Image 1 (cartoon, chains in turn red, orange):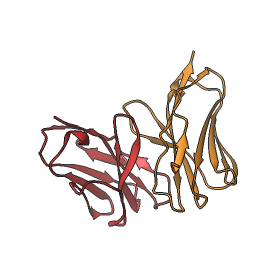
Image 2 (cartoon, helix red, strand yellow):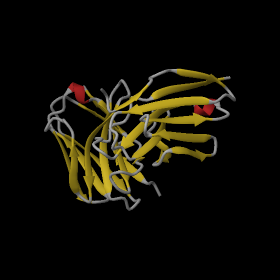
Image 3 (cartoon, chains in turn red, blue):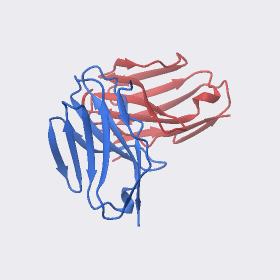
Image 4 (cartoon, helix red, strand yellow):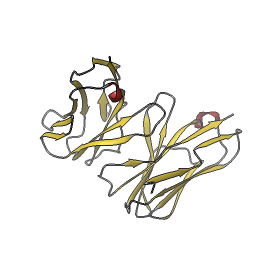
Length: 112
Length: 110
């Protein structure tokens, strides 16, 4: 009965690899997000989708590519991983783009 | 000027006291205001939302919004050690890019 789920919870990989993080919400929300939280704990928006359409695309390297196959899923694919990509990545969802957000448990990505 | 600003703290209060957390924002068109609590190593959790001027109370939490002065506050009454966490402010609507504030670390001391 998890509301927003992410897999994997931990991801350790080498520089240059490609990896994906998956997110699913069962709240019936229309809007989903990806956030990055770095070592300084600042939570920064990366992408937002509303009903499978991209509505926010912040200044993020194009190595990061979100994909929303349906409004309950938002996946994040990262190509050519770099050391600076190490962070915790949170998926979130909300009823609409102005509503309160519900967060997944996070994926801790470590690039070696 | 940052879109959403918070004092990073730490803010230390004794157990049983009122903790007052503040957040200011720059976009006058902002319409929705949220407070999240994040424990160390956990994900942010929505604890309060407020949309109109005035106070909104939920248990020990009170959110206060003043759009003219462009600030939103969170009061925690009868603070408990379990309230020790980072509190994040988020402002939505208008031209905001859904940016969170940097968060205020609250420590409730015995």
